[in-house]
Image (tube, rainbow, N blue to C red; front, side):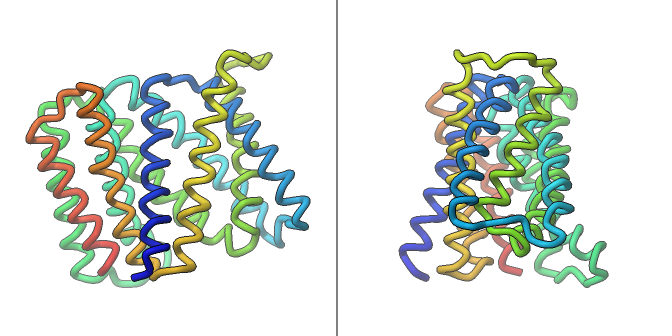
Length: 266
């Protein structure tokens, strides 16, 4: 396994946890929307300068991705308002991976391997343990995020085949950012929040580009399995923030990581 690919996946995981942590600390959809638009414009400008364009049929996937991501950020923001990151992050990421083989099987009519089903059961066990003792009203966004993550993963995996990843992501970021601002009834940009939102948007964009680059250096299954290291990274951040990460959440996260790796390598 190439060390460069390992480094890129771990760096991408760290960036993903970082922008999630920032959103947890400052859960502002206004800041996020403004930042996504600003970063998207820069990225799209770079793409245009490189001669990138939306490929035939690309707008279908771009539009679908933007709509799905609106729900993703709304649910994520709500989840971080109601519950700890150490509860929301493992649940959302693990259930997203678990939902993928089921969604693919339903859409393509393929049979899900037995190993993948075993992995799904392990993720489910970890999720039940993570959710135990938590009010449903507090963790329902994390549960819904699993389906949303699986949906945008399927859409984007096809979309980047028709349009260069950076240009694709940048355009989708602009559309999603504008839609998020519309949900907040925002009429003017708030400069005080632009910096924080732009940082979140930039970390998200860079992290995804690093992951796409890693796919070119190592097997996709290996990269996705290693990507699950983001979950223990998130727990470490939560522990340092005194979220009260106890043994139950650590064991639950461990089961979710194990199950996700089994699903990915199945």
